[in-house]
Structure formats: C-alpha cells, structure tokens
Image (cartoon, rainbow, N blue to C red; front, side, top):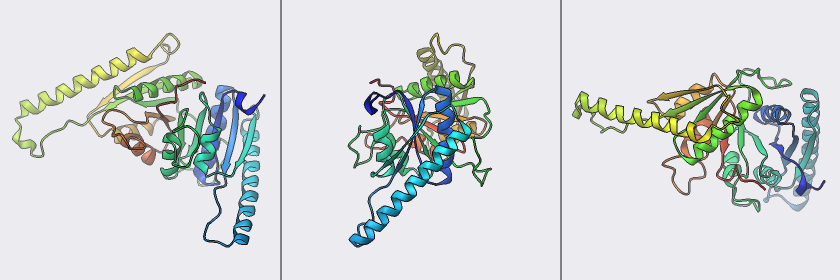
Length: 309
C-alpha cells in the first residue's frame, strides 16, 4: 500500500518535551481505541542561518541523530504500552508543525503537546510556510504534560469517563459535539455539554433596575437553553443516542467554565472558532484560552476536519 493509499491513522508530533511525551501516550491510546496505525513525526527544521556552513552541517547531523534516537525511543514506548498498535516513524526536514500537517489526512487525528500555542495555531490553521492544506484536515488534540507526574511513566492517567464539549450554536461547535460523541462511543465515556455566556451590561449596572437586570439575564438564559437543545437535536443520531449526555449552562466566562468542567474529565472538545469569531484570527479566543489553561487534553475541530477524501 502506498503512503497516499494508507488507512486512517493517529499522527503525533514528538520533540522530547514532557508535553510531547504525554501526547505520545495519548496518541497510542487513541490509535488502539480506533484500531488504526500510529505515525510518530519529528520535524528537524532548518539549521541556524547565522552559523558557518561547516557549523550548519554539524548542527544538522546532530539534529538528525537526535531525531532518530527520539523516534526510536518513542516507537519502543508505544510497543510497551500498546503492543497492538502498529507504529511508523517519520523524520522530516521541515519544522514540527509543517511536518505533522504533511503527514495528516482527512479522517486522521493529529496529536501534539500543548506547550505554548504557536505550534497548535500553525497546525490548526496552517503555518505560512506549509505547502499542505491551508489548515489541518482533521481534529487536533493538544495534550499538556502530566502535572502530577514529574517523571514520565508508561501510559496515560486513569480515565475519568467524561468528555466535555463546549457549544455555542455555531457550526464549529456542532463539529465539536459530533467529535465528542464519537470519542464517547469509542471509550464508553459520558458527554457533558457546556454552554456559557456573559450578560453584556452597562459599566454602571446600578443605573439598571433589579427587574430590568433580571429580565436581561432571563433572556440570555432562555437563549442558552435553546442553543443547547438545538445543537443536541441537530447532532444526535441513531448511533449516538445511547451516549449518556448531560448539559451545563452557566453565566460565566466560557474559558473558565470549560477549564473547570475539564478538571473532572478526560478531554475537552471545542470548535476552532465559534460565534463572534473575527476573520483573520488563527484560532478563536475560547479555544486558545482553553488550551492555555486546561490540565487535560483539548481537541480542536478545524473547519475542514469533517471532510472526506
């Protein structure tokens, strides 16, 4: 089978950081759940330009040696924790985000460490140098380092059996819910749908009477209820109707609400841009904030993530 004809896979980027180690563990587990292969990718990047030619050659050779050792160690780890998963290693001359993007196909899942947001932004919506698609063709999962395990262990933390999905009525959040429900079917988890809103009030709230404030809040509460009911009605089908689903509606900052809900979950799922998104932003402010603050993996659903080959 050629590379172009390969089946679906989980594509994970590794760079030797604790977050990338956690991402590798999560990716191996995800590949086992899906019954697909795992592609472990390390991007070399270009040597430092301000060095002499001989120094650049030495730097490049050292980088290749490190990359080969890192990929070999990564493959051995997968063999220990998930021996049923077939792992392929890829050493790419490109930068990490471009290397991962070039390996990904529709129907795959990309997994990366969430250290910093630059690489995640570049993968979700495409870096300026990539010749691949303008942005990720599949879901992207950002995995933080295990805070409670300073020394990496073999295997991800014990599952809690809950997946949190942020919804706001947008198509982006409907993609997120479809992915979250699919993950729940694979893992046997329940799904908690979270819709949060902040009531826009004048700077001087004392200028409003109590009745007016209460009416204002009731309007937003009713809109939230309609949003949650509408998204669930549109997304749930015969396959996912057996998933245990609960809904949480809060008058709070959406990032804070999702991060708090994620503390009791295995995964938080968000769209890449919801209502109010500004054209030109590489990723919505909510998804960026959740990735930055979350202590559990966060799945982001880019616009093209549901396309097929």
